[in-house]
Image 1: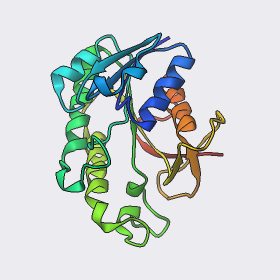
Image 2: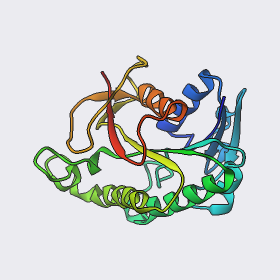
Image 3: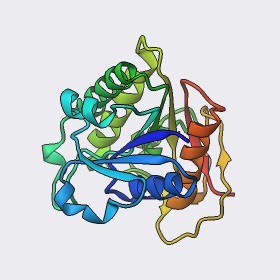
Image 4: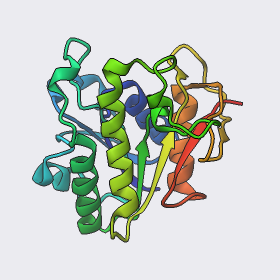
Length: 221
């Protein structure tokens, strides 16, 4: 079994990955900004750690002994925080820190949760550039995600990374089926996916890497 550090473990995607990994017998380091808000994460085979994903020393500590890492962090601490506070370089900084920290830890795999708005459409544009589909006022958030992906693609690293991008229909209400579908990067598909099945895809790709150094959409079946 592996040691998996999940950054953003207090969010919906992060919590789902923690639960899936533990259910499969892995040990998990649940990394969050404020452990006092997420004491319920601490459990058998789960160690709760404080770590901001852009803080090199904190990330290095959270990755000590890790075989793989999951980046499921939002730059926002809660819904009350507006987009005006967004650091446009957040995902670039996070990519740098995670690649450096995982390399130093001797880890091998990084799985990043992407944003559907950065996917290309069948017409050749990006979802984020269509105001009828994606609100222009939150486009800077999508651009920050896209910059992080661009940075990952250009990185000179030995880390085997993958970005899995769920659809707009990612839902906490849908059940775990244990099934999902990986799409092609060059077009946008439609569909829904449960957080639990997103976590299945993430842990599958840690246990048995099938896709490397690429961003791919993942959908429910």
